[in-house]
Length: 178
Image: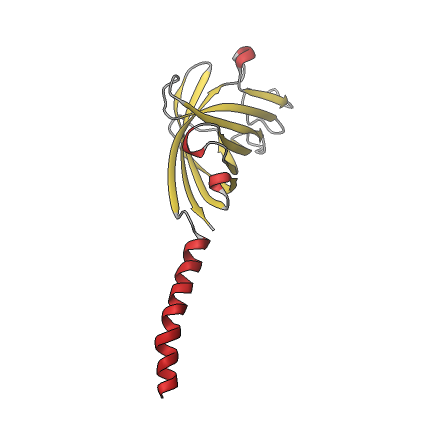
């Protein structure tokens, strides 16, 4: 009986301590919510466009025309204002993947070049619907580098401002770590 009591009082606290360490190291940063803004100069806005067609297969005016391929390199800013601080870039590509031309598939990186996350990036993919201003849609966070290593989660996007040549989207990233 004495030996079983010794085991219980000596090894149980050690086991609990080891379990707590394993749990914290498998999820070192917990959960994060980040908000930033994508500032894009849309197709057709001249040499300063940050979105261009690589392949324009259809005569549709929609960027999501079936078979169209486009690439982009947009500014990420801390705020919705066009002069708010630049914190990185949204770099990727999209493919018109809907025969109905109402959505496209995007694959992109949010590359942080300033601030707390400088040198880190988030990898994302998902559908981009053709929808009215203010529509919220979701894409998957599939990984990351630097401070976002082992990131998983989702990104909610809503276009919040548009002109003839610019489009500004609010990006809300909800991130967990393995």
